[in-house]
Image 1 (cartoon, rainbow, N blue to C red):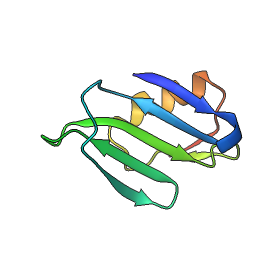
Image 2: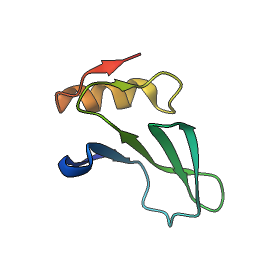
Image 3: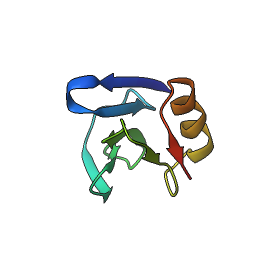
Length: 77
């Protein structure tokens, strides 16, 4: 997993897999999951992370919470 942060956009992207992007699904207005054509998760986009991030219900929830914590992002689970 790789953490990418866009300060100006107040969002983070968690890269899980290098497969080509085929489609995205919104979990809610601040969390989106990107998929490859075969349904494999390739990444997770998290918006408005300067306040906190809700990781509940995300795939790889414990790993993502730990990764965000390393980057000093407040996590809600």
